[in-house]
Length: 613
Image (tube, rainbow, N blue to C red; front, side, top):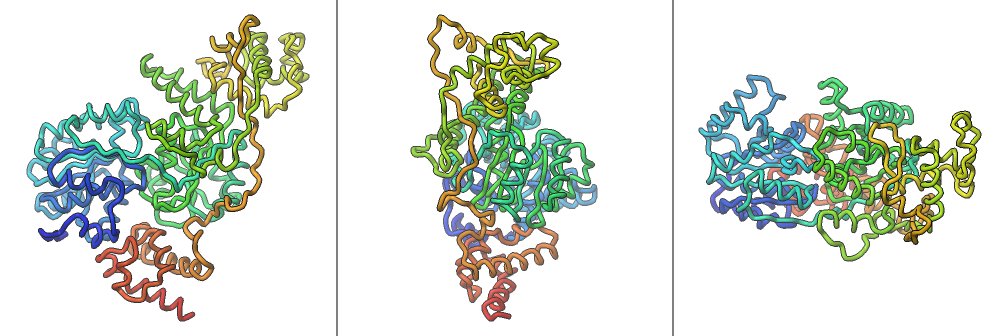
């Protein structure tokens, strides 16, 4: 696109993107890149990372090269930029040979502003030779946490990107991520040779996301209750641990009347691609997926992310939940987990072929994830503290803040549980031990002689569900460990013996009490129609009319609806109801190009609505 010499970053932000002011450290990051300096930035999902490299790529001579790990992200961002009149393209395996040659010719002719490619493509000798013949404005390395072996999305190719510094010492680089603890940040700097880079760390907080973790393990029934009460018609993602879980849950949701699409590595590539495109382009769909889905998904109106199993670590949890509410409107991060998840999470690391040092780090990450789940205080404070950020006051927007859990002195119950594990020979899983504690008439218990133990039938003061919660928390707090063979057999840890020894004076074991369904609180109910929460009935009706118009325009152009205007912009249009083209520019998200392209269509829709036509 044409970029007049006098155009400033702020002028471009307003005229091209339709925003009045920069957020976070965007302005400083852009200034650093324009001055030719390298940058490392950590910015939350939805915080506007792409603008940090898009504006300087447009203002500097040459083409901005964006390195991204997934084709879906490249396609979404290229579509969005072309809607703004930016000459954007992608170079990856989704293109046939003819299309690839066309992109290469455009690049050589200086006809591209921004080009997206995967790291594997960049490291190809042919591509490196191609770039050597071009003017390059900058290199943007997106999802930079992929460089770290300690991260949750490690990709070996990312570690070779330090060669950019050697080959193009005068071309500025920006590494961007929304997820990196201190260790991962250090590895990004080391692996990408960013020792001289300016570092911008923004808040990791996503205040629009409500965090809730249900420890009951209610599974599908709990998920259905959550969907009906909070998101009866919204788009969202449901993550499952296994392919079978994805297939079963998606079919179950469809049978219940919600349109849901499965996504996992066992499906043919064309099916995965078709489902992903439908999710991006249609309203109100649910994607049921393994964690193979979603990294880099640019859909801003995902109103919820639900986990049916525990993520491996807090980085993964933050990254996956961060796909909700990218538009800044209210969204939910909901999880249901149980005793089996806690055991499987620990076994996942124990059964790996990794070196002992790596396993120790992974166990630390597992402990942090379990700690977040079993927490009795504000979840957001703990989540941010993991990334070395302090939140002074409880957030008021997580389940523990809204419905504080009760704790109880479970010392005696813990001693009974641990004693029963020991007396049954440390050779059984939790369910068997619970049956012994409850005095169940069971052939296997009788055959093993465990109905004669002193711990048989001593646990009647707690229900089976309560005992499962106790065992789950004893594992999470390190009193019990599961075997490394994958059978879930429980054994005592050294910490457990300190609680069992008669001579010791153990500290009380305080556990969470099984949470009861929360009572409805005035002012705390969050509607599933988050994008329309603050609208009057009249404004909401106009919002729906504008959304229908957006869908028609998007279908005609074969692009996702949010590429035309996000929900936040439709929301503002429905409230402010501009009457002229000039007034359209006062709406956030409406720049010059989109005003020229779509302004009259939306103004006509508003006029028709107000006239009652």
